[in-house]
Image (cartoon, rainbow, N blue to C red; front, side):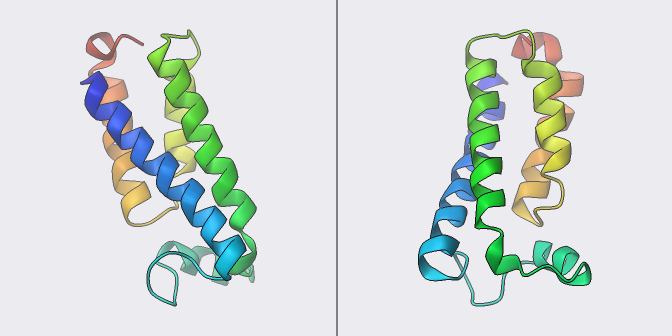
Length: 115
């Protein structure tokens, strides 16, 4: 279970970090010209999604920090994992899906994961 949760956290972190770099360098996110469904949340708040590269970099770093805590069995890894997963639920569709799976694994498999 720990391998699965690590892979999902790594996918979230790497993709968000690379997407943040990409939007800074290219002025668009990875993929189609129009960002994914997550962007609708920000459009409704009148926020220019193409100026959110910093947010993606931050979230990527937060995911990497959690992976460090998970891998080194830090006391804070459990609560941190729940927190970063909840905070990533807005990143539809894949960030949300991975975060929901991570949340479920943290809640129901805590002992097997070792956090």
